[in-house]
Amino acid sequence: MNTFSFDFSLMNTNAVLENSLSELGLKAPNPRKTGTTIAGLVYQGGVILGADTRATDDMVVADKNCMKIHHIAPSIYCCGAGVAADAEVTTQIMASNVELHSLNTGRPPLVAMVTRQLKQMLFRSVCAMIT
Image 1 (spheres, rainbow, N blue to C red):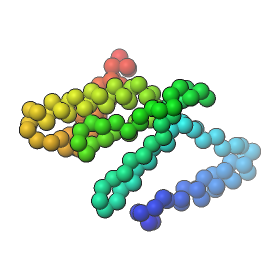
Image 2 (image 1 turned 180 degrees about the vertical axis):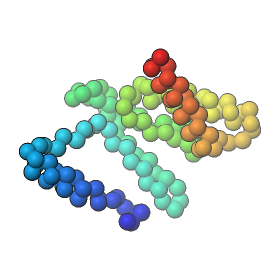
Image 3 (image 1 turned 90 degrees about the horizontal axis):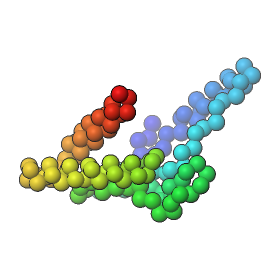
Image 4 (image 1 turned 90 degrees about the vertical axis):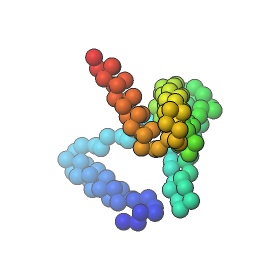
């Protein structure tokens, strides 16, 4: 497998699955389209992030200029898909937490620290929804 390009091998798996289902008289489910496009490209000099700017509510365009790439700290960004307001507030909270951490430690934040804090924050919010 070429690690520098897209892997299209799953297309063959999908074709075999569709043929097997059609032989049984069944139809494969339609793919779910979320409407958001987010892409990342890693190259020798760094990373390039890209995202569309439209926020939709089903078939209605709610915002034509929705930011989906959010700044957390110097050299640390977060891409969000789904509920735009949740992503905006979540990344604002993370940016504040990271700034406080940097001020307390006197060091720039590490990506591992940011991802750990984000995972912990999201886990707490999921647990709060369940209980």
